[in-house]
Figure 1: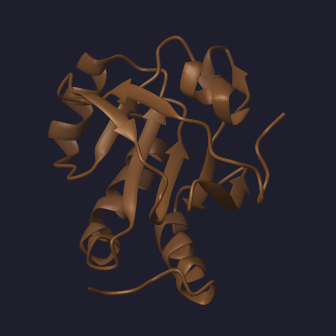
Figure 2: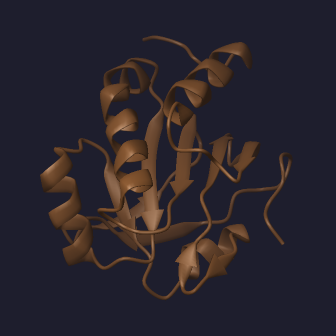
Figure 3: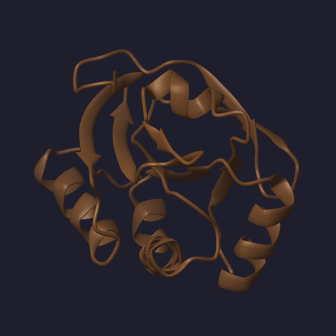
Length: 150
């Protein structure tokens, strides 16, 4: 069952596109978005739009992570092709998806986004339409009062 707002965020770690082990710290505002597959049209649109707004996310100290069941190598090629500044977490065994209760179909995660802070799920987006999603999440973070500058 997918984690809902109010649920405690599980401790997760996965390798990023560079093969570095990343332990995700959900103490500050964090966007964790699950997507089906690298280098497909919808996933490319979603990644490009998070990248286009990444400076805004960064300015507000919001961490962004993309997660799919693709390999580190696939993530590396995808991140380099799209010039991504944020981590893509490789989840080939589906452990991160399972920890969040994200469904998989044909071993691909359903497009699902979590907004987290203080180690708690604050927002959930299921059945995400990739075009415009990065802007919607940023707007919703602002409306929830989760954006602050240093």
